[in-house]
Image (cartoon, rainbow, N blue to C red; front, side, top):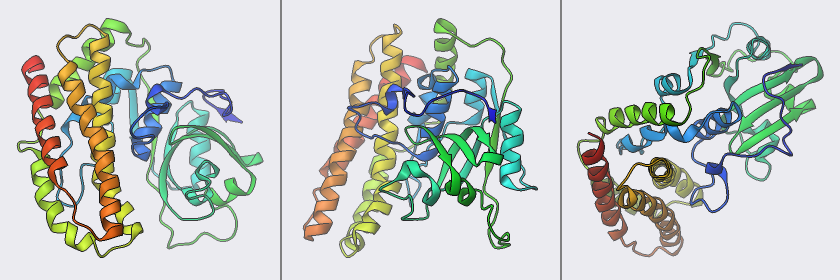
Length: 323
């Protein structure tokens, strides 16, 4: 058995970001897994959320937001490197976990039992997990995925690492990263806050030059006629790349600014409210879009104007305070 952290899935306490009463129970696979991995390693992931402020509408999607690896190094002393796969994947994972390095790897949710009811044994979906425990001889793996920590055993282990049968030359190796710890002393309290504020100032300088909600509205108006003729599966794909992506991201933005306020940063209430309203508005608008597509009825676009105004106000407040 190679193990970095000794955890029991039944007793694992999720980070509050994955707690109850959130607009978005999950964000995206990469961000969610980092939230829980950092939390389990004893770090506060909220301190690394300034990057959420800089997302933009990219033309065919909103930014698929991820923790910048440079930010993770600055705050936590964790150096993330790509793992070259030249042996079997399971050998590499076992090697790195044995060296005390979590391994982030793209796997097929069809074989991940924690996705029961959505993808497990139903649909092949790529998703990132963080492996912190592995026993290849006994077909066992402990991993972070989505909102929590899980174990995987037996045939699922064999299938996830493709250990049965001959290798398929058409099956490309997944993208894999490993995490090396460099800093000996963890940043705490005021030092962590100051380091996080430095990241905030950096990301405020990287904000979109134009209001992304105004640009998205123009694109969405063009997409709407096409969407009205599509099915529920297309709705979910479109919504994940757009409404859900920015909704979940700005809920994290609100969480971050609230974290700052709880640590003595003043006059942030209006910014917290602006980002929270974008998050909640995106969720409501998602339901309205689904209903409009189902009933083939017109969709009121004014919520996007409201979100544009809230984005403008929230960013102005932060920029005037920290830039």
